[in-house]
Each structure stands twice: as structure tokens, then as C-alpha cells.
Length: 404
Image (cartoon, rainbow, N blue to C red):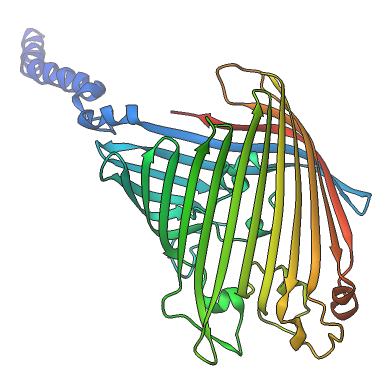
């Protein structure tokens, strides 16, 4: 027995250092301070210059067509996750992805259509900067310039447009009262055939580029603000080799009449040698023209009124009129009157907005979105179009929630 106990003590004595070493190793493994963090310590300071924003518009919709109630449903109207910040003294980045749009890569620019923004900005000097990547086309007018979550319903020209395009932009800011921007962009995200169909009379441009010039101004001590722009889109050539372009003018004007009342008027004019907006082409049945027609003209009027009852309660009203014309309709052998007008689209949106928090940009709203679509006699008799109206009563919330 004594010899057996002696052997047991000898075994314990020999194993004791191993047990001590194992305990030491176990403590090291369990202590995360011995490992590098996911974001290296030398990079963590960058987070103070980075923002993560969840742009949300959530609503309960009650929908009507021609005065008849059709359905009620909850809907995520908008959810766009945005990350932006400064990564160098003169270098900034911005990325925004829309989760309420299909995640499919576009044919031309090779990036998902759901991606609104993916670019960097380099400040060359105090007045000059250059941006490159997927940009917001600086088309002008206030309706387009606002955060999309704040728009209850877009007018035709903006709704049907490719608003986010890949390219480069140059910005000159000589003062706080003026800013000038020039962009050179891909004119579209899809291929020519995907957008316009198999065109019998036009061939695709070898350089389908868009050129956008924008002026933002502040006049009369900020009582009048402008966002004006001109855009030229090079799309195709006709049989004679002449360019088929889109010319677009947007004139946005904001009038801050009193501290409590603001009035905005946007004018839009789009002359399209190929029907880029598409309202006219959609009106014409495919058995007549299964491709985009030529020479359309769209004119848009958009007004926004805001009255601040109190810091927590705002009353707003949006009115819009979109006019669609087909200037080439004289080529239609059955157009005996020479009628060019196709459609008027009216819109009116009264709303009540409530801001319950002083330190958080979160608003609850209730609104009515009314739309009326009225076609010309020519469009109804020739293409079978019919007048109709839609409406929806909506309650919900909107917020660019700052997560970081």
C-alpha cells in the first residue's frame, strides 16, 4: 500500500506543472484582450466621422380606384440604408442601398439598381471638389432634391426617370450663396434595347453619355432659393446620322415668405427625341408600336406649401400637373386632326405632420394622395386609353434614423 501511495504522489508531482500551464493557457484563451478587435484599434478613430442612417417611410395604406375602396395594407414605402463619412482629410464616401427595390445588377453600369449612391468625393480646394462613382444626377428642382423618404408621391417625370447614374461630377462653391455642378454620366443603367426596344429607325450611340449642369442659389438673404439645371442625354442616331437626344430643364424655386410659411414651385420640361420617360409609349398598344416612339414632350408643374402651426405640427399640401405630348403623332395615318396631346396627370396631397421629439428627426403623418389621369380624345379613340383616378389615405412615420 505504501508503495502504491508513493507512486500516486509521484504521478501528481509530475503532472502538476502541466496542470498549471493548462490553467494559464485557458485564462489567456478566454480573455479577448489578447486578440485583435474586428475593427483595428488604429482605425477605430475613423468611426467618429462615419454616419449610419436608416431612411424609413412606413405606412398603413387604404386604397381607392375610381372612388371604389379596393384594399388596406401595411407597406414599407421606403427603406434605404446609408453609410457615409470622412476617411481622409480631403476624402469622403457615401453609400446608400434601397431595400425596397430588386437587387439585380444593371446591364450597363454593372451595379445593382437598388444602389442609389456609391461614390467618393475628393476636396481639391476650399471651393472645388470632384466626385466619382454612382451619383445622384443633379437634375434640379426641389421635388427631386429632397430625401426620397419625404416624398409621398412623385410626379411623372421624376417617377419614370433613371435618377441615379454612374459617372463623375465637379462642384464649385464660391460662397454659401452659390454652388455650381457639372456632371458627366452614363445616360442610363440599362442597355439601349432594354430601354427602347428594337428600334427600326434609330441606332444606339457609341457614347451614351449625359451632361448635367446645375446652379444652386440663395437670394435676398435666403428668402428665395433656387435649384436650376439643364441636362443633355445623348442616346442614338437616326437614319440620317443626326443625334437623338433628350433635353431636360428643371427650375426649382423656394420662397420663404414668413418664418411659418414656405412656398415651392418646380417647373420641368423634357423634350425627348426617343421617349425616355415612357408615358406616351406605354399608352400606345404594343401591336401598333412595340418600341419607344419618337419625339415626345413632357411638361411638369409641382407646388409644395408648408405652414408651421407649431414646431411640432406642420400642415403641407402638394399639387402637381404632368402633361404628356407626342409631337410625332402626325406620322400616325389615323391621326386626322394633328392632335399631339396624350395625357394630363393631376395630383394633390394634403397632409398633417407631427414631430413629437425635439432632438430626433422623426415625424408621424396622415395624408391623402389623390391622382387623376385624363386622356385626350385622340388617345382614347385611337389607343383605347381611359380616364381614371386613384386615391389612398395613409398614416405612418418617416425618419432618417441615425444609428451611428
